[in-house]
Length: 254
Ligand code: OAD
Image (tube, rainbow, N blue to C red; front, top):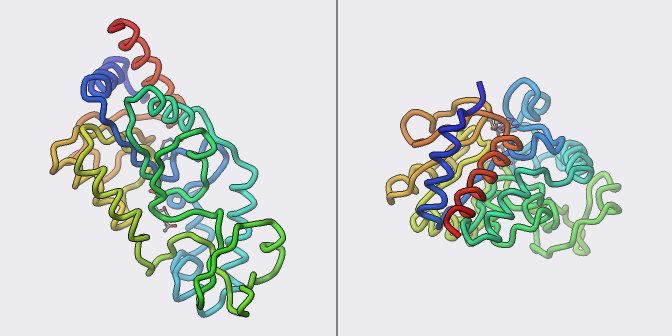
């Protein structure tokens, strides 16, 4: 069942009343752009075991195998564009309501939608890094055509995303923590909240006094204990309804 109008209204009032909103997004926000999520029967991890394909140990042991999965991911992401949920967050930022987006996604669709303050918690696919000298290269189709892209120094290049077993980039971790502590509302969209340490962000925001609004097609471990307002539904429709309600409240206040 989709979120009721009164729940959407209550969430919009919270956003407009407190402003200082931060969004935490996961794969679910990009599903309607054509990028499958990770978990669930249609997810990437039902086809590829993440420990075999998405850990740094697996990458170092057999980069060619991992690059085959990454090549598929790159193609899917390369064909996708932002959807109205990404657009809606960019609009909320433009209106001074949303301060930042912390995303676990590596697809770059928040930037493509025009969001300016984006923390890419799990990195991105725009860059490749040498596993030995850490030289960075902009991602270009030609490099993915190789079975394993290589650095000028001869070592293997890995994508600029966080693989299992790797730390969160230091800057992203610090920024995300600061946003979690300072925001007044955390809008959690399309994440199963199962991957550490990203799943700690809503708990931290709550402890520091933020209201938690969650948008998801299904309940998550956050839904009972952490979430204040749960809006069940797809990200596109739910963010669009929320934005419409925010605009109507703003118009009344003007
Ligand atoms: P998951 O695949 O674990 O969860 C996706 C969530 O989106 C689920 O809770 C779904 O119910 C929800 N969902 C699906 N379709 C939706 C829609 N149209 N609208 C709203 N919600 C929808 O993805 P994440 O939580 O992002 O890590 O996964 C976290 C991390 O695990 C990823 O960043 C990735 C993965 O391993 C790395 O690559 C390091």
